[in-house]
Image (cartoon, rainbow, N blue to C red; front, side, top):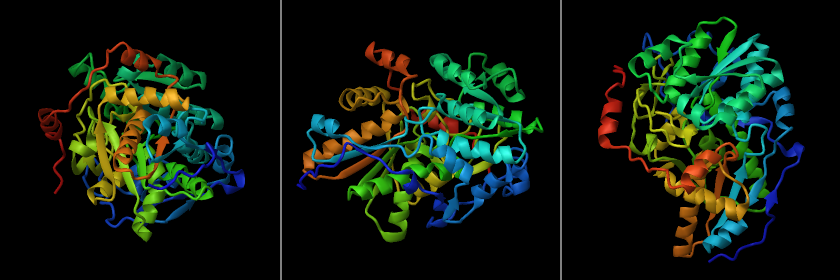
Length: 457
């Protein structure tokens, strides 16, 4: 067993050490991505197809195969108001688990929005601002993304309309208030504001909503207003690109203490948080043969990677978004109202999906009761209340640390604590009062969900 070496509880970087470029894993994929398809023609998407809802700079980033893409100076300047985020050594958690493992976590809850989402919200709003756009529409699940875009829009003087999944809108009223504080208009989805929402409500007036439905409403809003573009908080290649600031910082911080992870872990809904922490390390694995494992953790109630299929599917319920090659449960999937609202998406990032399909990353599905048990253990040892989404990564980090205890191996574990849980206390209350249920995604549910996949020749 390797002897534990004492390192600081917290590792910072100076402003001069901050990365000035994002890492684009498309440059290093062993299997290049298949093209996204136009939802109407089913032909490969062109820049002209995307221009009604995205600015040209983001369209370029979506398809670029350049390994590093420079971060604009204005974005770097705004990043410096909350970055670098700290890297912590979880000494007290290690002691509680009696493990020889060394556990580190990159804490993204220090941002003004309380999560990693601001890393992409700022550049997305910046590129839309210089393109002359006046308003942005978006969706949000648990509210972290809507909060981040609201803050970024206020920074640049843009209007912001957020379609919030209805079950989360009801569960998390203070997220709505936070977004409104920054000037956003927040609408529970499905709504009567769009044709897509009205169709859903006509079929199911009591619909809890889903990210797929909220995306449909936000895309329709942007496509029908000349001054409005659409912004997405996960899944797309340019969003994943922006989040790599997390993993790049973590690599520099770990180098400072002469460490390198054996295992990198992130929760995974659409995939931006997992990609953000893992892709810079996967570059080492692909290019230099580094023996690092990357584990994407998802809810058992929404097991996209672990139970879904790798296929072309629509990115939204109303079939307005491009058709993307990804792991999917079917675009008609409406998941149960679990408290990890940010992980309730039917599909995954095309990049994450391709890496999983090629065996370069792992995936694991966990149940919400065990997730909250791990969250409470983490809060009581490390002093930070984690978001339910982030606690999925904590659960798996604890599992891996226990394996180290049983085997005697002193592995280095790194996970992304993607946000704090200060707006999720109702979920913790449900856990403490034993009102949470573990939901199993059955084969029958999967069969029904996959019945709507588009037929692509």
